[in-house]
Image 1 (tube, rainbow, N blue to C red):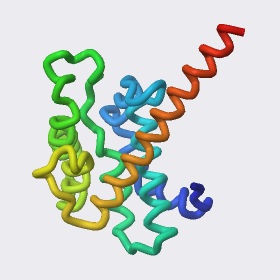
Image 2: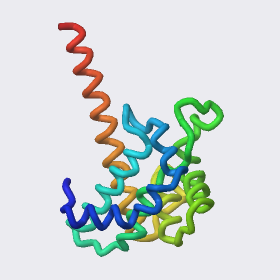
Image 3: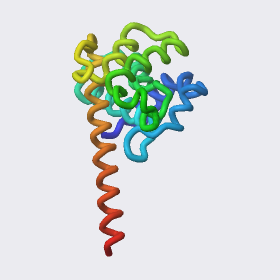
Image 4: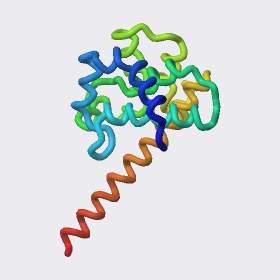
Length: 164
């Protein structure tokens, strides 16, 4: 899944002001899946959701799609080491991320819905209400699955190498 140079440049222009924010840069400190940081995971979700939008000609609002995807996991903590949150992380982090993003940036309703509903159907009462939210929900599942599979593959390869 590759975006064209023009498509990537447009996305970088949209996300530049968000990417330069020190709070957004904090996402680089937290691991999401395997050795993928929360920051990189969010960038992956941006790329996948925008690729789906362009290639399937879905006509989603590109700015809201990119911003919502980029901030969908803006919860700013290491969920692996928070015993009071970890057990419920999958259920709670979308609302925490939406609250954080709203506190730092002025979000529109689509962006709020994207962030708040990206874990659907796990968060069954938080329904995606726009095509952008549906795209990010799907792109998040695709990216998470890929990142997790690559982690398991790397562990298997390391195990095989250690036995050889």
